Image 1: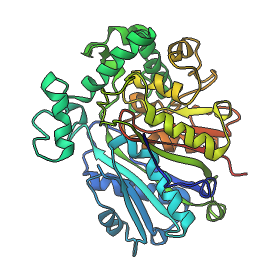
Image 2: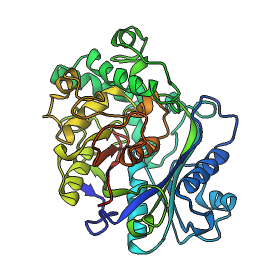
Image 3: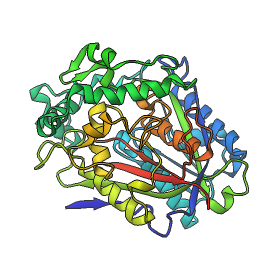
Image 4: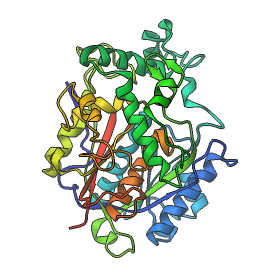
Length: 399
């Protein structure tokens, strides 16, 4: 059984584009409220597009976002909204926001849609602290944690550690293989002035010497906790052509949830060393766009924890099941490799903004303005949060 997202049909594929991107600085203590961060990032996206705020008539964000679109609209002086929606499941929502915005402008329910995410995820509520002392109600989401919390699985790192242990056992991957993701991300971040870890690359030895968080996860396997905001502006390709920036065409967008889906704890499937919901997104994208793995020049792979990068590469067909470790060992994810990933530094190197900054980096790759620009970029893959109902998209050039 699977649940398929129809928010962006084949008819909408290639009909919408991201025309503006904007972000705050990324830090560990912003000194501002998340509302201020959201407004600042939206203002920056509008400035990038050269569009006045009064022309925005749609907004899409995460259900996890604490600052409603009507509050952001008030602060931006947006007079009216014809479309507004929220996408659930934390980081799994990232690409889904763009897909829903694309569907809205294609359907005519909005002309210009802002997608945003902002939080003080380090200086205020820290996501890494987990669920201890929370989820005590009788609602189904709260009850779902009762299957794992009594066994000490209380934090995102502990939930992913269970998956990583099984993946290592099943396919022979090692901690060093996970470390290759961290090293590549930090190498790319070192060139990125916007990255928190600018000019701070690491070695594989650094990774192996970093302390355990929950075995087999080390500190450098875990994404940052960040303060910051990121916004993106979506419109039709036709309208985008009238604005100054190079449009990043949304070639396809998909969401997916599959059988016996849990929030980061889908341990009761036949194979817990795979991410079938991401595989569902992959099949939808390849079908909707007519593209395949060989047509992707860059990928921004959701990297909240390094072990979950490997099965994503497998689900999209960049390598066979269980062979992602070899794919990494061969240097394929480096800037001069077959599939450079996370050229901004990813969530391990640049910042953890629930994946929205990865979409912004994909836009820069399409525009040719990334600090780690890859030659000949035609299509960029972006994935959203894994181990939850998720989403993915492909951005491309305007033909």
